[in-house]
Length: 482
Image (cartoon, rainbow, N blue to C red; front, side):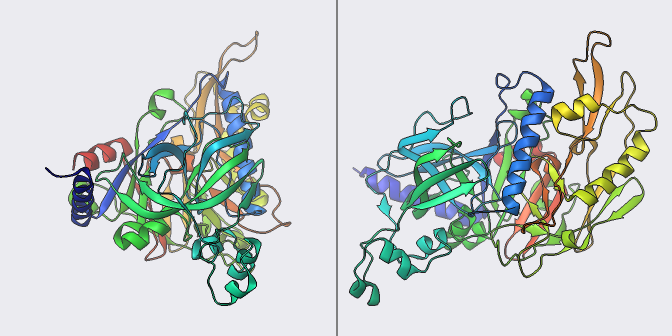
């Protein structure tokens, strides 16, 4: 009779055959929206704009690589399993703005986390196959980007004579501290098996490196970093299978903060697939924009925003949005973990002024709604249909993306006051990033709300980001059936 180990081995072999055949892994992204946590639409929007602004400020003044995950209503999660005896499955935020996979590990203390969304019933218990990462490893140097491997081994108390002859493999990588705008964590690096239980086909990665956090401030959920780094999930997947790790895409189902739509699955696709053959000739092709290298923050997916069109008027971007300088300043980050698109103050004012010129003549400003949501401009429409101009984003490489109306203009009913009752209101879903003359880093962010209804592809081999309109729920169904 065959042993259990034989069946595990056979499963790995079959998975490898299936992977080479399809050249993609398909994963479901889930989205969270707590109706109990937010008592009104303005309350939800205010929380979301506040966290978007906080995350953007962290991009401008990063202390470490890891960026701030957002609150419910803003984030997409995927499930990963760590360990083999037995494997334990946790939900993590999928984040293109950071480059490390980290998890809450037992015993886990989360400070100021009461009432925060947490899909994980328990923190990770390290399995018997987990091993600390060595202080001389490339992974340890990546986690401690400012220190040499010799410094790290010295911190780990490796003797000088052992450091000189590179014999410090038995000394583990020291703990590292990650700080972000309103939270932080301390973690250690470990290696273990990683599997993606919900993927099709299934996948097991041996010797996967991840951060194990025993304490965190303000963040009870781990992060699956998808940034441009060696510790990110795509970065480590590339070592296992270049055709899987060199390209990934996702397609976020349009939700407009509707709880019914939020619960629909969004596809995350690792690897390349023949879109025209699998989706049909009617599907739109991608428009691509080059990735810009950021020498100071290399893990960001930075692109150049050349202009924004409001109706037929094209508003040119300032030079700092179009390129990244040698100090790492400038450009726009394509970020799955920020909700709303954020623009530098002077450019934002030009964009919304043109929008207001076209919309504001026939509609009154909703100043009270602007204060309550953090969005601006907002207008009352009462019973009339809101007529708003078309908005298009023009990126480097002569690529233009026309946004669906729901991606930049959100309409909802406000409770109003006793005299006027409920009123229909609409707000522009972009944010003012403030004065960028101080500090460094990116000056704009393309948020996930504006990415809804598009397949966004990150082609690491050709160093480009692409956008194509898709029916994301249908894309999930067609690929899942295929």
